Length: 176
Image (tube, rainbow, N blue to C red; front, top):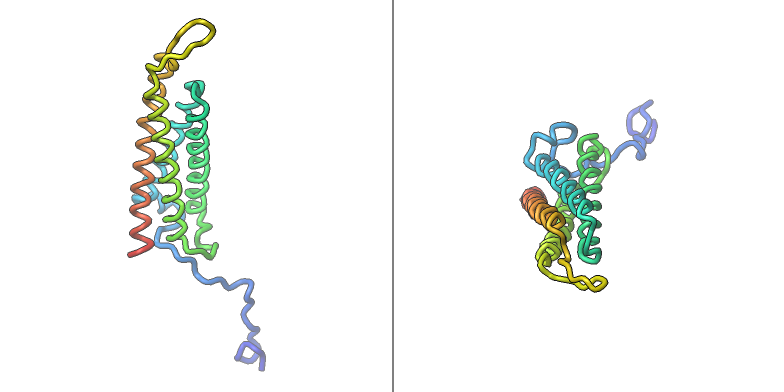
């Protein structure tokens, strides 16, 4: 008699049997049919626009807008990775509490993006501030930079709102 209990049946290989991951979102392309999947796609779209708009303004205030760039690029990359893990179906193969990871990710990014939105709004509000550059007093932001920063602020707010909605949905899944 073998260790598996039945004659001739080998014991189960512990390297092959994994506990089931804890996730309530569907894996594969079905994720795109949920509100959470739609919000992640909007986060990627709006976050990419924030990134592009801030970069196209030539970053006149690097201390403020450098942080906005860091947050938008990092969140964009992590959201792409997050969506890719769900689209590829890897969530069913990795033993983790995906509901908690979803909540923790969206909470963290929501807090950072809210701060980035406030910094971008602050940078935009400095439009009328005049600075002295080599004997000529000129506005800190040109009209073109101001317009681009206004658009970046609006999209940063929309991205923050999408992360907030994703956070609410993730909280409902994590704590039903």
